[in-house]
Length: 216
Image 1 (spheres, rainbow, N blue to C red):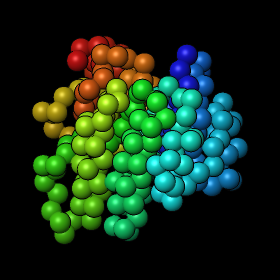
Image 2: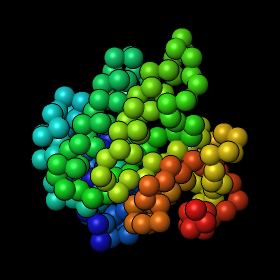
Image 3: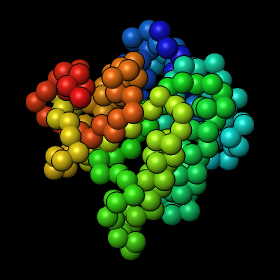
Image 4: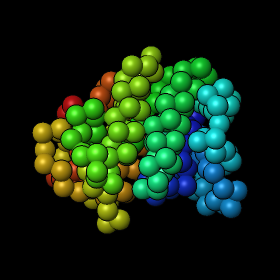
């Protein structure tokens, strides 16, 4: 099984993802910022690594990622100031990509959002603009790397119970998707070579996750 590092291991999606991965036999390192978060991730079967990636160099992040076979980026500023958004969602994410390359980690899964990209269309006076710009830059950096990458693009996130069913496609109207199902998509994507090099945009839908991913 894989050895997977989750950056942002105490986030809402990451806490749902961790037991799916550990339950499948993967070795999981949850990279978290606060020591008091450690018991939460350890209770899910993960190893806690206390590190503030926003304050770390590429070399320092590479030291944490070394020895893993995959990285999942699930961190985010969570709608903080523009400065913090750029620092985490763009700059730290880009450093983590470079760190994965430097550490020899072959697989990288980026949690982004449906519609992300340089042509996101979010006006500069919109509070979402800094996040949209940050994700566009980080996603493009990942695409240009030598990593076996997948970018996961869910539509608006909810805390509804997961259905295990999605609809996939960039041409779909954005609706919503539960965090449970986002976690299931990421867990399914990590070990699916057919998803390498793909930006997977999705909503909740009628097709089981595995079937939807196999249809790509």
